[in-house]
Image (tube, rainbow, N blue to C red; front, side):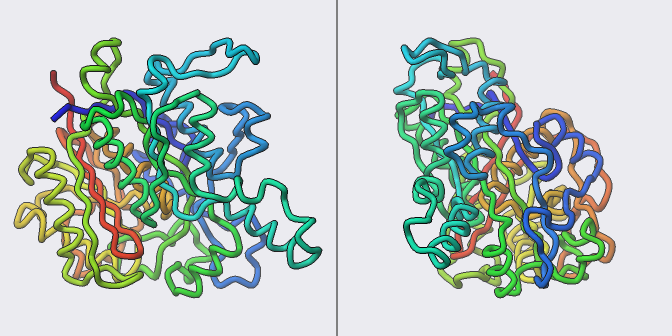
Amino acid sequence: MKRVVVTGMGVISPIGNSVETFKEALKAGKSGIGRITRFDPEGFDVQIAGEVKDFDPLIWIDKKDARKMCRFTKFAAAAAAQALEQAGLAETADTGEGLRKRIKGSAERTGIVLGNGMGGFEAVTESFHKLFDNGPRRMLPLTIPLMIPNEAAGNISMIYGTKGPAYTQVTACASGTDALGQALDLIRSGRCDVVIAGGTEACIVPFAIGGFQMLKALSTKWNGAPEKASRPFDADRDGFVLGEGAGVLILESEEYAKGRGAAVLAEFAGYGGTADAYHITAPEPSGEGGGRAIKLALKDAGMRAEEIQYYNAHGTSTELNDATETKMLKYAFGDYAYRLKVSSTKSMTGHCIAGGGAIEAIACILAIREGFFPPTINLENPDPACDLDYVPNKVQYGTVNAAASGSLGFGGHNGVVVFRKYYE
């Protein structure tokens, strides 16, 4: 199979709006959780979230383009701009309609695959209010193109003039990870030389908070201490904290990257995807479904379990997920699971839904490149059912030759990706 490499990364997250600030926050064990500011949460049982802070889309996006984007699309476009700049694949060209950003190389051989779970919820919310209060003629004219999940991929394609496939992956919380897997296949199959891939989400709005609250999925007992609320694998966890953000990776065939002299950050070695076929919201209790996804990803990478030093867990801080994911890791790694470093960076970012898998893939690549294991913060009272090494509370340092990341989505979707150091 063609080898696939990573040449650029970009991130917008509750703990940093660049790869550098995100990395330093991971090492510091910084929490990005706070009281909701995007709307007044008074009257909600849930009043906290992992919001992106100090985000100015105009740093990365033209003002004219930004006016036609919802928040999730702005996040994706900003992360893509960072990643393309690092990869050296963006340029400014005269299109006949003025100077515009354009992709270097073959536009027809450049694809996009982005995961998104919920689309532009703020446009939906605003237009529903206008519809019910004043009738359809008062709705936002761009309601539909603003809200639909594929608009992140569509807008990035238009900004950079890419003309390969532009797909949107929707598998709930596994969307970002599954998008990376789909991008891997596009390059291996020879359909694309370059794929802009990742995930994005921005749904900290009353409708989403209320909906997850009614599912009893969100943390409610830490409103007074938001930074303590996301506590994966801890006995006192009581639900996940909703986050937002985007992660984007530039993936290329090794041949193409070497041909243009690109600096390679890591090799994208393998992907595995499965379905639980069990329950619409709960994971299959044995962990077999997610465990198979890990085994498939390792097989795809041609690697043994013992070659992985770090696993970035889905680790949502819910009662069912964390205990089941521990079983999943034991199913896949056997006795080696007890020697594996495992952590949940959601303890810092919250659960960024479709953005989570891509953001966590970037955490894996940073761990490989800089030799550190991000901590699971707030792990103060370990759950006896969660008995692996979760890198509690403080960053640890050591050699990371290969890392994996798993994402589990409502509907029983399981996706796992494997990255390793790049050697020619």
